[in-house]
Amino acid sequence: MNGIYLTKVSRLAVSPPKPSINFFAGWLTHMGFVPDSLFQLIPEPNGLSLTLCENIPKYSELARVTRENGGELLHVNLYKHKKEPNIHFSGAVLGRIGFSYDDILLVRYEYGFIRMRKLPQKNSRIVTARLFGQWLEEWGFVPESVITVDSADGLITCRLQENGRERTHELVKYARKNKLNLLQVTAQKDNSDFPRFEIPSSRFEKAGLNPDGFFLATGEYGRITLQQLDFDALGF
Image (tube, rainbow, N blue to C red; front, side):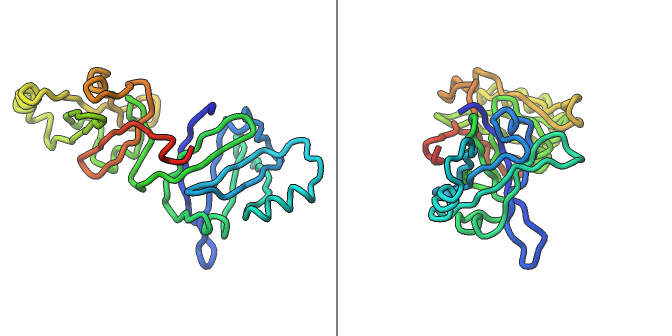
């Protein structure tokens, strides 16, 4: 696979509401999904696949196979107010797959082919060692907040320390005693001042994880855990 992307299921404002997938991405063009190109959507366990349809020998046969597999034939969109191509679909096909509003989807893509899988929990993200984005604020990890980072076999845990800046001396002693990393969340100046922090590579090594990999981050207020992303378990 050539790339990884993250999107979510939204709600189409009709009566009754329907689940919808709608995203714009520059990489679609590089993968052959140019405006007006035809692609085949096929439901799969816990997700779906999108296959670019090029050099079609017989459209009626393609339509028959797609229909028999519970899929749809769709076109890539381009809107005047956007530079990036758009993929949008909604309705019964998503319901049959089991997608619902606010599900987080992991997308892997290569030329002519896109596969989507639902993450096991809605409060999950795909991250690297460098975490950033507005979503961190939802869990209390705002700029200038202080966190501790711990690790166990296959797991890294980041915990928010309330009033951390006022408790610096106390937290330094606590981190040393318990062999933790003490970090401060900063603002990503070139990205709308979103919060960011980077987990040291030594912490990944202690957890037996590759610091250059992708990780499944699961969170709640004041706590984020990272585990190695298991593509096989997700159905890729």
